[in-house]
Image 1 (tube, rainbow, N blue to C red):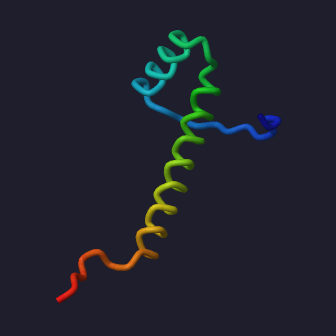
Image 2: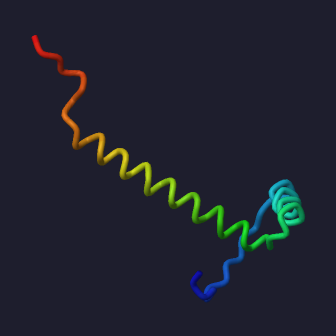
Amino acid sequence: MSTLERRLHVLIDQERHARLTEESKRTGRSVGDIVRSAIDLHFDEERDQARRAAAARSWPSCSKRPS
């Protein structure tokens, strides 16, 4: 894990705060750790979607059928 160097101040509503707090209590992880994991997951999914889209564009069209 990299050294934590940047601080981020984010305002959230009460419902999100409650969900984060509950998850923190349930798992024993800090709220900050849960938020960092959620950020990583979001960007991993975006990267994977971009890779799948690029792979789909590189394949020949499946809708073309021989006559």
